[in-house]
Amino acid sequence: MKEEKIDVLVIGAGPSGSVAASYLFNKGFSVKVVEKNKFPRFVIGESLIPRCMDHFEAVGLMDCLKEKGFEVKTGARFLQGKKVCEFDFSKKHTKGWDWTWQVPRAEFDKTLTDELLKRGVDVEFEKEVTGVSFNGNHSRTTIVDKEGTISEIEAKFIIDSSGFGRVLPRLLDLEKPSVIPKHSSIFTHVKDVRKPEGWEGHRITFDIVSQETWLWVIPFSNGYTSIGYVGPTDYLESFEGTTEERLRQMMKLSTHYNDRFDGLPYEFEPKMIKNIAKSVKQLYGKGYVLTGNSAEFLDPVFSSGVTFATESAHLSAQLIARELNGERVDWETEYSQYMLEGVDVFSTYVKEWYTGNLQKIFFTDSENPIIKKQICSVLAGYVWDRSNPFVKNHHRLVRTVAHITDMEKENAGQS
Image 1 (cartoon, rainbow, N blue to C red):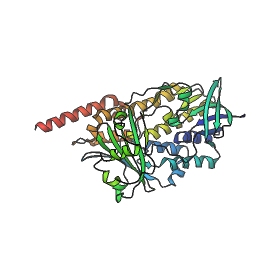
Image 2 (image 1 turned 30 degrees about the vertical axis):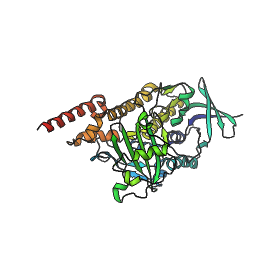
Image 3 (image 1 turned 60 degrees about the vertical axis):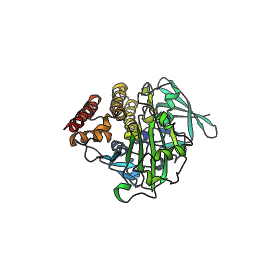
């Protein structure tokens, strides 16, 4: 059996694992990344938000991404019937990046791992983690390749960036139910042959067909577009037939997009992910840390997945570097509490989206530009900026403003 000793084992080669590995490799630590799949591979999470750009830049992964010419995303549009709400990331409360990308993740993720390999980072694909044990100051991880060959890795620290694979949560019994309502998604890609000229053909849009059900439309720079619905699990399952037949029925619910995509062949049989939101009992333990979707995954309505993945990866890598250099790290305060503060903010927005309160604010006839800038910062991923009232007071402020919106609408109807 092959055995090796390293400083840090990273499970998963997506954006989270790549950011963590890049940071630690740059700091001189011995790092190994193991990935179950062969890249390029399809994965969801194609709409980014600006906060993640800070992380790619900080670990030296920005230039390789810019070279690819991905579709630039400068904001987002929300539709509700004939009502339109647009957010421009350059008009937000918090200073920071005012753009990001819309990306086919197969190409995006492979760009990251190609760059790591070019630098000399040890990245191995088609390697599955089947077991892990912790003993004092190190861990032993069992790896199986596609031929069934078993090897073991001794590491001082493990970063689980396995995303929906959630390797350590499964192996260490860390799973727990999410408090986010049970929603599922169904999605595919299409060659967007009817894409309109100009901005209309490039902008990301969320078309709200009911309070709990919405369509995403994410155009890419390669001529393809990602389309997908999110809604209550039982509602999505109420449509009969194959996943393609279900999605085609659902596309007719969108008066704005039905004509653009009606009858176009789907690039692959639509995929369905049930009960999207996930949670865990704890984000770290002695010798390991969970990042990205292997820790907490919310709902895709505000595209927070990749940003939480890279935020947690960059932060955990910095803390691991300090600990391996002999410093004391307070993982509860510096990692868990910090990350959960951001998750808590975004969770409020997800929950209040589905209660309808946030939709009332988005689609009000009396828009408040200051409130819009503050909410825009949240949507851009700057959910740790407590100078923003919609971060600091997120639990009550969304409900309060929605209530005021209701009262203004009622008074307007009486006048």
